[in-house]
Image 1 (cartoon, rainbow, N blue to C red):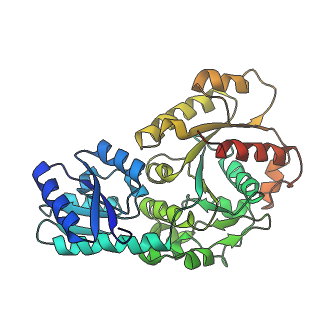
Image 2: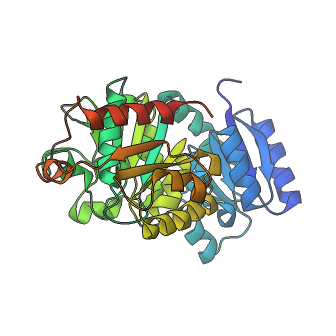
Length: 357
């Protein structure tokens, strides 16, 4: 069964689902491993089984389903609404049942070849901050450096609107490759092509930088989610720098991660924003148990790290001390030294993040 695509099927109509399932199972190139009749069932099946492909009505495909390596949209009647939903879902193809069933089987079969080329091995850690200035870029870049001290790490800037990672790590703006260079190759990616697009930082991690200008418009949320999956095949750990907004990119990319870190400061507004962000992440399909809290710029104050446990019900994974040298270092595109109090704090955070459970 090595060359048979594992498919999760998502269709509301039971009779149609039965027909499609029997057809794919008899095709010899695909096997239906689960069926779902609504968006929640589909998301749960994808999360648990990590199939090669999802064959589903476009209306059932939520942001979290992009964790699958390929989404194949299937409907019994073509409509503008259905086509638009397929585009939003980042579907590799759109097929009408039963007239295009042969093409559907061929498309499902092709997903196995892509899986052979890019097999996920990394632990993916997404970093998000609900408020500007909380330190998302600082945490993501220094956490990548901490992971690089123990293995191969790739930092992905999933914020094409601002691309703050590039100046923060001193990467060249015009000379380095970016995510936009990989988008046209999404269906043909292999480890070599992914590796060629990564820029290497002196501290040891590699980075997939965000594009600038008009090129940023070519990298949508579904493409970013697929790129994170591709990068996860060429590293031990992947750190994803998420944008602050929760409207599009975050709901699509965050569910791909094994862990999501919310970066908070010790103030009431940050706590309130963090609560809303965690609720939004849960609605997007991120498992609550995979979300952790990191306190940044901790100093003597009325609100303490212990209040994180009281408000959020979990102990902070990391408490990063206030360091007045951070703004100056970032303004010069440099990270803090690999030896020192802050580096030790990030090493402890890296260990906590990778702990099972």
